[in-house]
Length: 159
Image 1 (cartoon, helix red, strand yellow):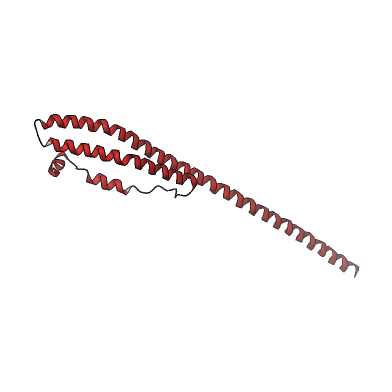
Image 2 (image 1 turned 135 degrees about the vertical axis):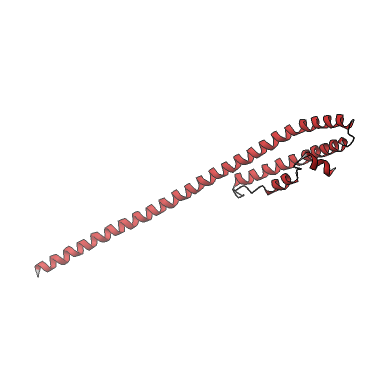
């Protein structure tokens, strides 16, 4: 009977050690799970920050391109107006082009500042995390491009 008690005692000690290991492992699993959650949250924050920076960079590039293009447009329209004024001496219909160019220049001036302000507002929303980080498709651009006459003859047909 003495050997049977030793066997029970040994099994009891082995069971206790196994339970202690299990409890220690469970504690480590809980700790590791918390660490993983924290790292995942930090990773998500960093990805969002980088995406916000990317979108902000794109918005700034759009603004810069608009400003550069608009500033290049005014002198171009002025030169075209001068040329059409000279052409009007020979072809009176050229005055129509001149007035059209002036209306285009006026319209561009009227929409550039509000557009730049709206881009600034959207950039602020992105900075604060209140806006979606994907830039929308610029479908309006296709309407504008399709409205541009393909040839000189198409333009004068509209006159």
